[in-house]
Length: 217
Image 1: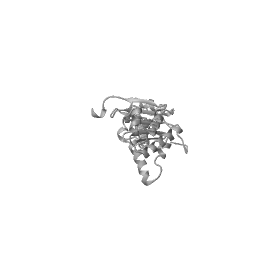
Image 2: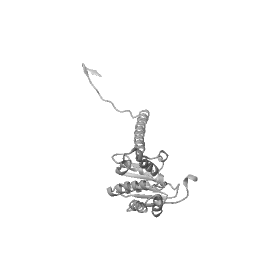
Image 3: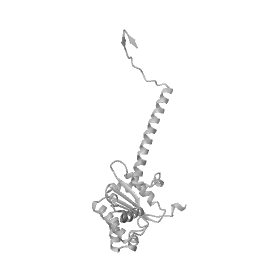
Image 4: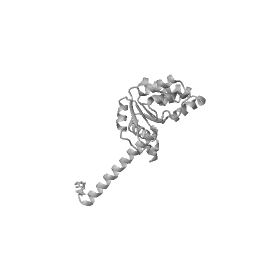
């Protein structure tokens, strides 16, 4: 208001009537929902960048938090069991927990890594560089496809680089360690296969996934 040619602000008191309180609560909820959606959108971008398969984005696993915490301390993980026992579900849930911020994580099925190695024969380049240098590597379905001799050597190079650099690595496989050695050696050198598995399990957390195939229920 104006008083003697001067503008005077007398202040105001916030209305505490039921209608005003309801409107303020509505605004607070809208702001909270907007913040939640923004966080989810960022998380989805982080998970996609990390290679988490879309099918597993909304899934979790009771062991994931514990395994992720172990990897943050530098521990490797070896998850093995029959098909459909939720190994990939657990691995994806671990990847989701490790992604974001300055932490870098990469999840990839073994067949994709093998394909990249094989394409490099023709196209050149170093397909293993990003897998070797990422902070956390998660390899799904190791042993599903039998690698040839040269590819097995490349796989050893990848695992050995990460082992020497103490970069935490998680693998899922249908095979217990002794069986994985035989599987990898079917078309390659047995000593190389043994060296790969030895590094994968040294100091690693070994978890056997048991039970029926959940996909057939």
